Image (cartoon, rainbow, N blue to C red; front, side, top):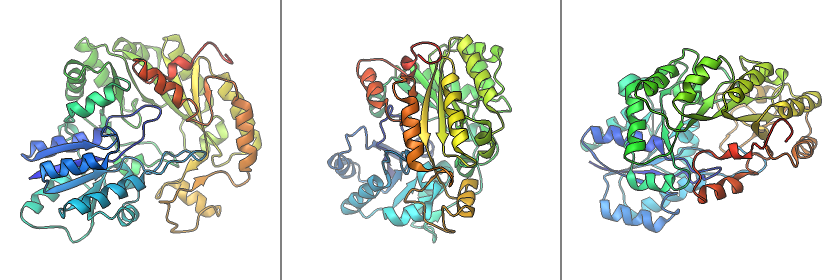
Length: 448
């Protein structure tokens, strides 16, 4: 069958990220003998005319629309992405009567509500490679599911998780805006952070891809597509079982050294491990530090304290690796005292960039949703498609915003609101610099 897969994401800050999930789904369908065309809405300059042309030229039998994010989770400057997917589906329905199937991480967070809002025919919840393949196989026989939302309890692992089929035209667009190629090494998350959707989306156990296949992807991205920088898209790269080291060792074994970055938990990383990662090209580490005080770290369900954040940061600094931290204020247990303590803790970090958020986007099915209901921030069963942000009830929003603005004003490497540096980073990419670029905001030690 002919299948058109549309990546609806339009987020481009701080830099655009290649639509990896769509390309992994494309690979699974191509491996099954289907003809697949990928269309990226951002790469096509958000042009409905371009999408109409692709539909007319390819005459697909099925159209898939991927929703990566619902919104940008920025309380102070929110951008809603569901409307874009809705407009795409509305336009598609004017061009063809073939089934339109939603999918992607954003869709799977609240599928029924999004399916109603967007107006597609079906939706696939969770991993799409097997479910979409089954949907297409049944559609070939004229059979369609009774339920509009399609779910499966089975999870792919090892060699079942396909390498992405990177579209060369789409890839060129993203490489021109940062030279970053995306690779996934595993799925699943074993952590119990109260706000996070990853365990809901990917499960609570780690399912690793074959390390050789991962490194094959890296080799192909650098040799064929000329990527100059690799971003590992895992929710947490340094899993507690240390599967990530199998990938790093395979890179070292093959003599691969290309600048790369990933999201790290600020825990269980010693100088020897960091040295091995640096040998393979680790250039920058993005740390999910999340809360800047021990009180709020505990209430978020974290397994580490702020002293661990400091120790981890210092280990990267000793190795010459740039670090970026992501912090949220307004967490459960937050008080004026913990806010002021957190501000000083963030300022104490050496040679690091900190992106600072106010409030936490509440996701259905998380412990944070249950906390918010108990505290009267939410009502039971409230539709969260329209975003609600958690800020501890005893914290005044205006005071928090003014306090954070005053505290971090004029400090180049402390970014509040978190999108305040986007224009600078995008300009650097236009000048031809590659990678995440936030490391260029580090000008010295401590309060520089």
